[in-house]
Length: 183
Image (tube, rainbow, N blue to C red; front, side):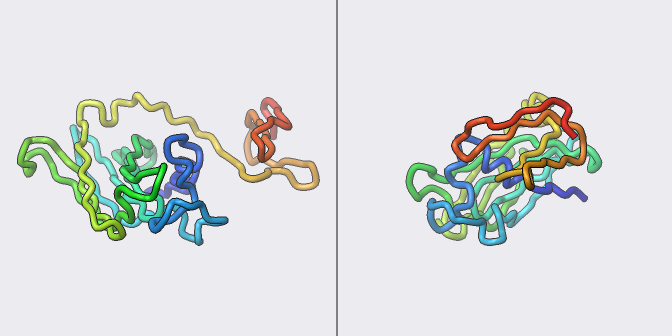
């Protein structure tokens, strides 16, 4: 069992190629003032064993796309990738992932493993070819970090549960405070 915490929200908020979709839903691209209490809404999961490792493919209904985690060791789960075929510049593409399946190379018509996502809103199928050569090779360096938004301070005091290098920015992106090994 693995609890991803706020990984989906943080990733979709901070990744430049898709952060315009943060807090939008599957029916249009306009951001909402909140995520309607569902966030990206993980809707479906499929698990596959590839090259001796176990991967979870998680479909996100509201923002779209698929998160991939290496769950081989449930005590040391690693984020691997995120793919989204939704159009960011205008509403379109594949919207509202509802179901997700993995097709292994032996069941595939061309020997390539695939993840297939059924999209409820757009009425489309998204087919992702799985690159097994690079999947889970450890090229992605996961750093335990945290993001506090909008403001970690109360009455001018910021509290943290562990020592950390801290940078605080205002809403315009200007750094207003920095500290090393703050507690």
